[in-house]
Amino acid sequence: MLSYSTIAPSLQLGDFVKSYWILESNEAYTHYSMADVCTEMVFHYSGRFDELMTGKEDSPSFSAGIQGPSSRPRQFRTERGFGIFGVYFYPHAITSLFNISAEALSNEMPDLISFLGIEGIALEEQMLSAKNNGERRAIMDRFLLKRLPYTKQEPSVFAAMQQIIREQGLVQIGELGAKYFLSQRQFERKFRTTTGFAPKLFSRIVRFHSALQFYGKKNCRLTDIAHNCGYYDQSHFIHDFRAFSGQHPLKYFSGVSGATEWRDAE
Image (cartoon, rainbow, N blue to C red):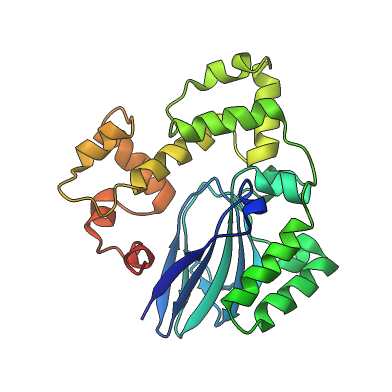
């Protein structure tokens, strides 16, 4: 049986970590990973997944690693029970906590040792050998708290990013740079460094995630979701939804695609 739950991080990490999450099952499972502006740190403390590769041999996943901000869907499969502890970061957290460009992680999934070096070896060992998820939460809190503050945010880009998220992607991108006294070129460069994406793509993915929040709401048609999320028409909505999820929205919102299994397990 599949189970999904979240744990709040230390209050001091609230500006950087949205939540810790746990996904467990004693059965085979296919996980559908969708486009996301957020980065995750993932620890497979029980079982391993293979990434399903179209036209290629399946690729074994890491035991611990980073899933960077992503603009495309992926699928992972395990044939036995598993347990995963994840850290769901806000978009700016990677630059702030680890002092690297988020663009370097865009659509990438490095293992933890490649990402953190010797520090990653110790963290992976502690997380995978912990007795329970309460211990894992405490380990992650200690690890991340040591990195506060690492670097200061670029104020203009941080404010623009917050505006895009607050307005669920429905912003005039061309006006953002001028609003924060940056040329369009400067703004796009700094935005890519902080979030991993150009502002326009970042906004499209944020809007896609606003549509995902309609899952489970009764009597909600695709035309209603498209309208509420600011899409020009239903075909535009379907195009973006398929590009970012690998799913037709009709199948996704019906709950029969498999991509919503973890949400139904909450």
